[in-house]
Image 1 (cartoon, rainbow, N blue to C red):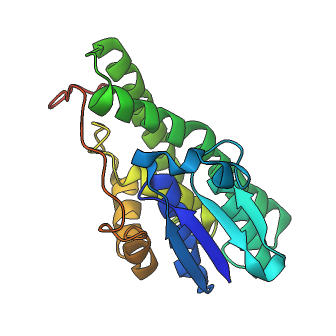
Image 2: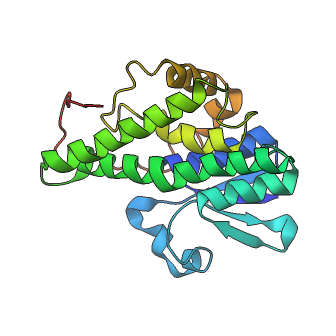
Length: 223
């Protein structure tokens, strides 16, 4: 049994989607980020960085794994699913997984902060992160012009990137003209595991944080 400690964020959704795709038995514990539960001593023993998600593998002596990318790799290798056996194809999947961890996530995360939450309106910062997010989307679009999925087959690379890409409007980033990315986004959206995974934890279980900064409407995004 896998225990998932998570919240309703893109990084949390990665793991719930993967668990749904894998059909692994799991239970979920909602972590209230507004109350800083992730900073409590008991949680810091599982993840010293105080971030969600974390899994506890009770079938493996309560082994805990933090960092969403590391969790995806752990689950894929544990089950032998969602990652290729072929060395080169496996490397390709890991490359696109790391692309999300090092680029898509951090850039869209900063776009969200400055576009939605930051108490001061700083257009240069908003443009910086929205434009870089758009550039990264173009990288994904180029890859997806050559392949249905980010790897040769559907994998943890797709699962890692999609929960971030799907919220492009929330980040104020356009996907206009990126037909391959649009196609992939829709195919991901149509997957039952993705539909279920983005509703775990249940939306009623944890109060959502409201906008408290200045929201810039209809930003201009250049490519």
